[in-house]
Image 1 (spheres, each protein chain N blue to C red):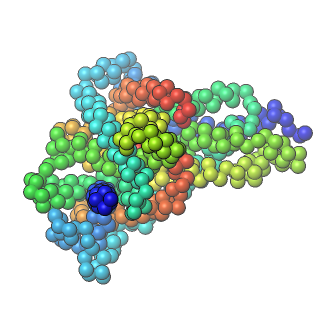
Image 2 (tube, each protein chain N blue to C red; image 1 turned 90 degrees about the vertical axis):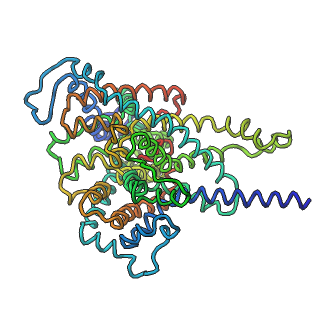
Amino acid sequence: MPNHNYKKMANTIISTILITLLALLFLFPLVWMLVSSMKPEAAIYKDIGGIKAFLPSFDIGSWGTAYRELLSRFNVFIYLLNSIFYGLSVTIGSIIVNSLAGYGFSKFRFRGRKMLFGLLLALLVIPGETIIIQKFQIVRSMGILNTPLAVIFPSLAAPFYIYMFKNFFDAISDDVIESAQLEGASMFTIYWRIMLPMAKPAIATVGTLSFIGSWNDYIWPLMVLTDSNRFPLQVAITNINNTQPVYMNQVMAILTISTIPLIIVYVFFQKYLVQGLGASGTGEK
Amino acid sequence: MRSTLSARSKQAWLYVAPALLLLTLFLFVPAALSIYYSLTDYNMLAPQAKTFIGLGNYFKLFGDPIFWKSVKNVGQFVLFVMPLQVGTALGLALIVHKQRPGNTFFKISFFAPVVVSLVVTSVLWLYILNPEQGLLNGILAQFGIKAQPFLTSPTQAMFAIIGISAWQGAGYQMLIFLAGLQNIPSDVYEAATIDGANKWERFIHITLPMLKPTSVMILTTTFIDAFKLIIQPMVMTQGGPMDSTITPVYYIYRTGFTDRSLGYASAMTMVYGLAIIIFTICQRKITGGDNNA
């Protein structure tokens, strides 16, 4: 039945075109961001409304101009290093703090364990976004305002990550611990040499989620940091976007710069993200 | 045996103490402080003059038109972003679940906005939606549509934020739906096809029911997250125009941090935070406790 085949082929072509248009709907802002960061300011406005808005200029030599101008006006390298430093500190710190607690709750029997763990899970319902002002008061009274500690400390412990580690350690048999103890290993050696290496998937998931969360964090660092040399990229972005004179191509350049490291993280660690699915409903964290 | 289960117990505190200390400092104490502050007229500019005023802040709050406006705004956001974002995510998952040429490209395209932070998203769209020289009005002009005010209009601003948020977030939920779709055994479909079920019937009677646990999880987490909207209005509209995009969390931030009225902001934290806690507990009940983290 050739007629049927034509119909099927026409259907495939139409649906492919529609899906491609849909894909372009998701991509066009990002393409425009990248392309506009590589154009002179005047060319961006001139090209708006035509297909040229999404195409780079022919003058390859001028592609980096906005980036060079941006770097000469702002300490972008400092912002980038700050973001990486906060991100890695939070990642390593949260892996250690939460895995230690998960190990404590999983492999030790102590009075109040069940109650404490229940309390921990109950803490999960507190919406952190609504208590930032009070949290600011704590950090202020600790005297660590405008230091990296103010950014890092409050992001370390998370009931959800403790829960994840505890579940992971629960699945490891107590026999492993007992036979290691017979050979003279201390509980810390067992944690460090046996449990942590076995928990690599949990470490990868908690690490990836913590890094992305820290990288994207905006309001908290904005509140606790006043010295612009300590700003992470997200805070620097709005700062640059509010510093006169504002050039659109330079703004697009800082948006692109702050997105590239995350692309790398998503490409290499995406399979661990799927395991952490459900931690949050939107891409907020 | 050097150490038995009970002997280990003394060490246990060393392991759980760092996390418990941090959670107490940055989660438990701030929550407890909001109860106390909410009963005072504490202002950070005059910290010595803090006096106990009972439920004064709460009475003020219930008569505060901006607070109610913010509740109405976030209600509008939740009501529209839920079906738009979750529906889009399901549609995208169904598209990329089917094997077709270019599938990897489509999947990456739909997921791409998720990689972009909310601050980058907000600043980028600020330029796209610029009423005079923005990209979108430039494109609309090609189709003969006149320039729209978008974020500068009290009636359009929240809808612009709804659309942008769905654009940014749908790809993430697409992945969750996709995982759910891949868990549906293919022989169920084969059996239904043999029984004469068409595409639509298979979707309604197999796909949707099998996706129910995934959908409930996505809908409830999106619901609760949507109530915490702050970054998009903070960066794009500062709550305007005419308070049309101010949200409760943003209003708490402005009152407590920008205006330094900690007492009044704490009363808002109590009322709004408690509402979110109640929603979250209901969510746990609905999802049946297996998602209690």
